[in-house]
Amino acid sequence: MSANMNLWLAVIGMGLITYAIRVVLFLLLERVQLAPVVQRGLAYVPTAVLSAIIAPELLLPGGALDLSLTNPRLLAGVVAAVTAWYTRNVLWTIALGMAALWLLQAGGW
Picture (cartoon, rainbow, N blue to C red):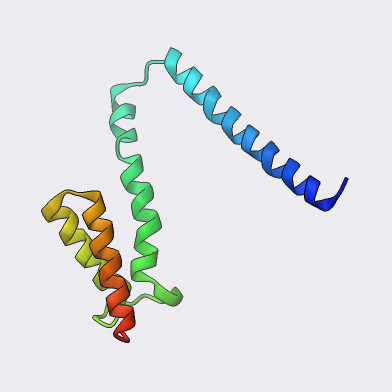
């Protein structure tokens, strides 16, 4: 087999494995009643995961902590957070946050 075919087989195989793992969990959770405390805890998972992805990008540009006003990512993040709080609209939040980042970076911040 060619290297290209091996790559495609690996990608398809990993996709099937990932899908199978998720299907099994969904099928098991249909039959099991989770405790209320677990259900309340699971409600915070999306927020925790999103925070874990976003916080390092805003606070650690280049791998070093930067809480200054010269950090364009942090400033754009503040713009996005204020937009999210004020509008409660995901599209406006993304649009204004990205526009702020682009303008700050273009301005040499």
